[in-house]
Image (cartoon, rainbow, N blue to C red; front, side):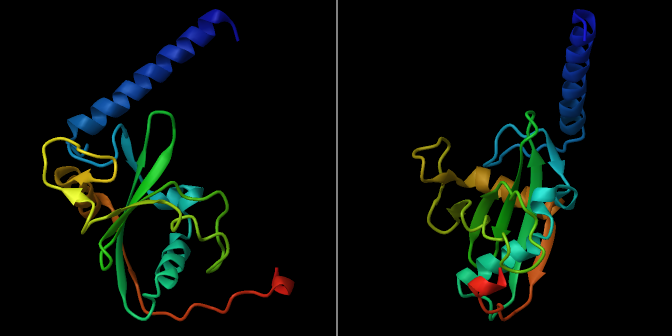
Length: 177
């Protein structure tokens, strides 16, 4: 690739990126307050391999918390950043937690297989880690306006998912792997 082609490609990339931001902001599509800063566009989670079959991750999380005997409701909304990174905000309504999930490398085909990444994700305890302030005061707390902005964005643009009560399968023996 010669210098002219590379320069043209770089300019096109910058123009595309700016158009994406302008389109998103002009449409009033950008959440003003959010715990996630810098994202440029919402994504459809089912179009990204790291979020396919997310119901298994939700099931694994619920079973790990021993809440699988009741219905559990979630809201999931995905975002993409300028560098191509994607993340999802996952609101577990009954437990009042908000997870920031990067997804996983391997798509689980069933419950338990590779479905533990959500448990290991950063989370916010919505009952104890949210404060009413104008400015951030500590790393372990989140501003109410930012949390509420993320929850509102999820309610408006995210996927609502109800997980009915279930019995998790028995753990596999080493011979089953």
